[in-house]
Image (tube, rainbow, N blue to C red; front, top):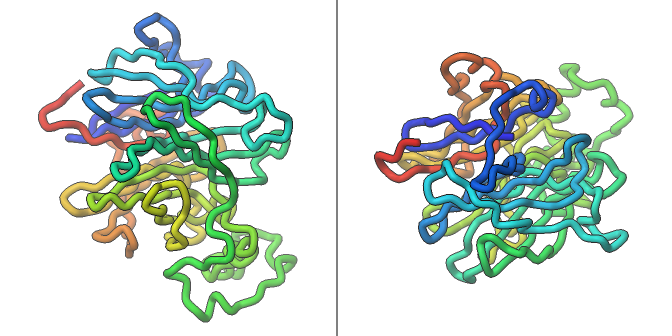
Length: 326
């Protein structure tokens, strides 16, 4: 369920691709000798403890039957199960009804409100990966329980700040672009084909992460536009909504699994290509401002199986205290 790689002051957490789970012999256990079940998660450091949040995955299938698990550790090696931070609902028709799909949960702490805020990718029960929603929950304690607030598409009725005015005015006949990967299709995607299609109901949000900058501003980074284009969206001061300010980067680049961190005033992001459940080569991007422009770099991974991100996929980067090795 996990893979951790040390990157000189940072930990890159990757998730093992599901078909490989049955083939790998190394499975991490908590202090009670139970397997850690915290897929696609992230880690929050608060008051001397690391809190690892991740989706509880069943032995078979992809639907969420339990919710988001929470584990705590003082040393990043020995983990105690703190329980289910956000449980699925037994209420028929609830956004988080048992059998929905909850993925990539991330938690950040809001110093102004004293609340812990969780965002995750949500698909409604029985609808596959069509809804492509972002969901938010809140708690008074890091381990929860979290109270579900809402879910939906992102920034309905609002265009990205870096989308040219001329592109915003374009109209598209979607029937002309049923065939993907043609030069004409790439050009249309770059000019906002799917942004325009989804403008009224809001932009799609699938694989995602959260990032809190030095000034306390928080950002939601997610794969959008049919997993073709990454978006970086600013959150409101309470971290519970989107402010309406967002950008799109590398249109048509087919990036997912974003993991963002900051070092020496530079923003760095690791992503994955889209190859289903099969691992692929990691990608790295940098920018001097979170609003871009962003530049692509070669695969940052080194060593055996680095060309397949060690059989996993990026999900979160955790900064470690100086001189801390595990």
